[in-house]
Amino acid sequence: MRLGVVQHRLRTTTTEDVHAMFSAVRELASRGAELVIIPCVAGIASDEVRDGVRAAVRDAELPCGLFGPTCYTPGEWGVVDSHDRVQSTGPILALCGDTCFDPDVWKQAAELRPAIAVMSPLSESELQAEAAIEVAIGLSDSLCGLVVVAECAGAEIGAPGHGGSAVVLLGDVVTEALPGPGLLVADVELPIAQPEPKAPYPVVPTLLTQRLAVHAGRRPDAGYLADLSDGLRVR
Picture 1: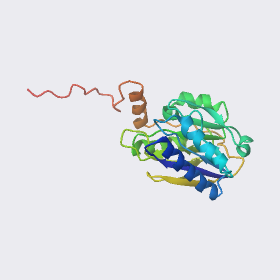
Picture 2 (picture 1 turned 45 degrees about the horizontal axis):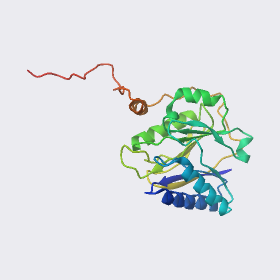
Picture 3 (picture 1 turned 135 degrees about the horizontal axis):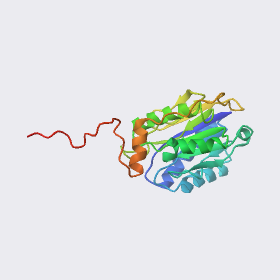
Picture 4 (picture 1 turned 180 degrees about the horizontal axis):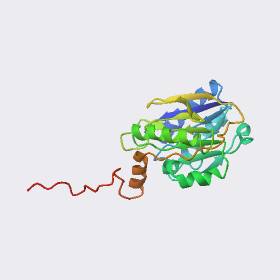
C-alpha cells in the first residue's frame, strides 16, 4: 500500500487551508497514494478542514482514501476511521495534542489493537517536533508497528505547527519531512507488521513532560532535585 502524508503550511484562512490541503492530496494521489493522511490544523474547527478536503476529494473523484480524523481536537484520541485494505490488519488510531504523550492513553489504545497510529502532536517548537518523532519511534515498537506523525508547519515559536511529520515502521524512520511544508510517500507492505514481542512503552522526553505540565497548569519539572528557586543572596 502506498501511503501519503501532508505536512501542511499554515495559511491565514480556513478556505486557504482547505484549498492548499486539497492540492496536496491531489498531488499525492497522482503519485499513487492509496491512503492520504492530513494533519490537525490548530485553532480551526477540525471538521471545517477535514470535511472541506474530503468533499473536494470526492468531487474530483481522486483514487485515494483520506484519513482526517474527527477527533483531531487537542486532548482527544480514538479510532475514528478505517480503510478497506488496512482494516484486515486492525483499525487506525488517532492521537492529537497531549494525548500523543500520555502513557495511560497508550495503554487504553493498545486494547483496540490498532494497525496504524496517527499522531498529530501540535508541536510548539522544532525541539518538541524532534522529541515527538522520538516518541513515535518508541511507539512503533510497543503500541503498533506503523506510526505516522502528521503535522503543520510555519507557526511562530510557542504556537502549534513546527513540522516533524514522519512515517515510522517498527523502530525505523522510513521517511520524514523538513521543518517546512512537504509531502511524504511511503510504500508499506500489507498486512502491516506488528512488533513481536512488544517492547515497553517509551519514556516521555523531559521537554514533553514539561509541556504537559504547563498545559495542565502545573509547575514544570526542572529536571533536577535541588530547589534553587530562591537563588543566592548577596549581602
